[in-house]
Length: 308
Ligand code: FUB
Figure 1 (tube, rainbow, N blue to C red):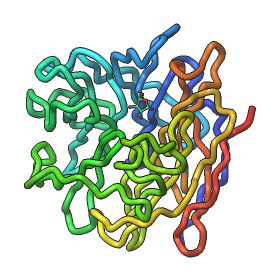
Figure 2: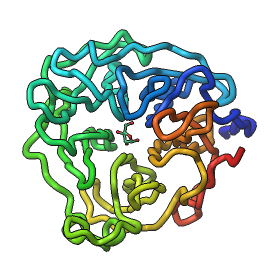
Figure 3: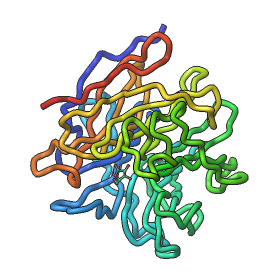
Figure 4: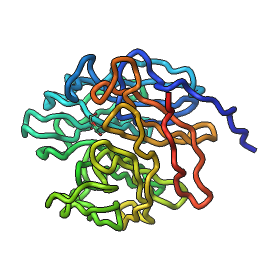
């Protein structure tokens, strides 16, 4: 019989010493790691230069592992160290990032590799995995039970591809997921292009995951400010069914939100960001976490942010 760890609550925001953004949790061994972006002090835009790592054995006390990955790690990158996610395969850790590309002058998706969850990390291939579009942001990665890995990203549409077993090359074509109202809430992508006001639909920050036999895509939705919504599918590439809100709009002090979900020691955790540190806000964000339980049918409950 597995005994679940005692329920414990971190103080939110979980990091009080830096502005941290776009959390991507990864449970590995006895620790929960969280890979974050990093807002600069007194920023007036997402002028971000590096990514950071934190870990905890109890979800209360967090160790700061510093910044093992930055724009300087990628010869092709010159700005906007935006959202990222790390995954383990065959003892190696692959950290998928997005950043502004000096090759294309637009945004690009890259990948770094390391032998430990805290690095050191280096650019795995010396060039972007995908480059050249302003909406090439916010990569999320998932390793399926059959060994097939998938990568998707994008704002305001979702690009989707298979990864080869090496985790650093794309297998086949990059596809665009159909942004239907059935899949992602309304209005559709083409309606939005014509100026129809955002309501529930996908914006950015996808988080692709599998639990039991269900595939989930959580994402920032709705426009400005963002809430978190999700869709479910029976296959990793859909068709997706819009399921509704996970974290509704509330007074978090940040007009963006960005989530990551992971199980750890028998508990389920939802990470997100707010503007709740002193002098924080839309460009001074901070990672927070809430424990939750899935509904019996596998759907997500409504998760409210810590109010104070
Ligand atoms: O942190 C920069 C950008 O803000 C991310 O890429 C988006 O998801 C939003 O959180």
